[in-house]
Length: 495
Ligand code: SF4
Image (cartoon, rainbow, N blue to C red; front, side, top):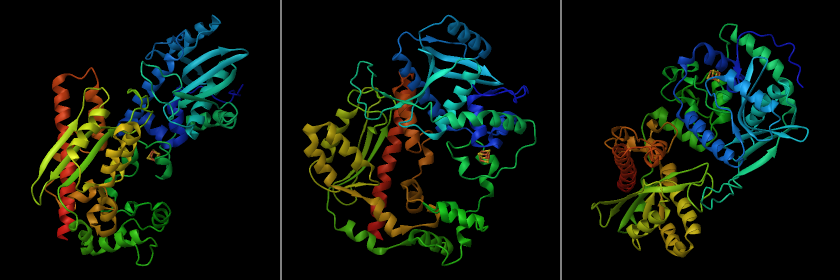
């Protein structure tokens, strides 16, 4: 058992997530406790929490005899209830058991009695054990053992992404279990000292800690805007240099924060040199040869874009956890130069859209003509569909063979200072077609918004009016994406 005698009661009650915040950055913990209103809304964190709840719910179904400790908002009752269940020598697994020791309170996903002690199972929605999971388990284990329950096994149950869902709510095999008891010993030994130090942090002035890699590791900190206000950033921050980890760090250490202040000859990568050159000149660079290969292509022409969703817990038969599953496509068709038609597909029933998705797409794309896309993504998704629908594989392969990816072309031949180191369609479009504006679509302005809208639309609790509105915005968004590809081809061709 851990020695907790040095930890004085201070009135600061730490939850596991607070301690994890303090381990990421003591200043983050200080701000969370004393100035929580400074935190920004973090959609990624909200989605992560939601996914975590879904995954834990499925994990519980694998223990049908389990007993849930409710009292989510009354932690002292939850602790008492857990104690009483364990005092009964219950053999049933306990869900959400609450334990406290030395001002730290934890709740465990699944806790059960085994031969000579207890087994703790922490359920994770990731597909492998990460370092911060070990901290997470170490904190829980330290508190649980300090509270008088010796652990025999500490298990991380994470998603096995080779699992294929066979339907009927059968999730046996979804989790891979890894015993981390030995791996967490070193972390557990550090915990008393960490608690003492973090309690001091809370009773002192705001710690002076600068921003850095720790602000994103393991997760994006919600106080980034407070610690490093974007208003203080120059128009062309050096952090825009793509894959610039080492050089960006060096430049910042030298006090160079603006791309325009980087001395000539300082950068090695050709891409970085081009970004600097164009930014200093403040004038876009387009290689006139870029359009040559495009001008040679015939008609009809197709401009295609997919939207996809991933589920940690697969809901459609024959699919895997985190598989990219397409639910929507948009296609602009140009039968002859300048004549444009549009077709689209979106399924918000919540049933698997895959069969109709590919069937209608093959019908839309007919037999010949280049299909313009902007990324490798459509090729990957079509490849997966060819594996799933073997009877259509040949037809799908013919579609794959017609794809013309504009992203490498744009990367090689075009850069505008306003792209700020990015060749994403959202970065390129305002520089070539400022009249096409995603901001006019209120709620769906990027792929993540489209995924969130889709999740809401297929939720049985969403009413029909809201569903229709979400579908309208999703269709408008995807249509704009393919119209952007039309304009991009035109831009390159006209050079
Ligand atoms: S932004 Fe960085 S420095 Fe500021 S509190 Fe968060 S982790 Fe700490």
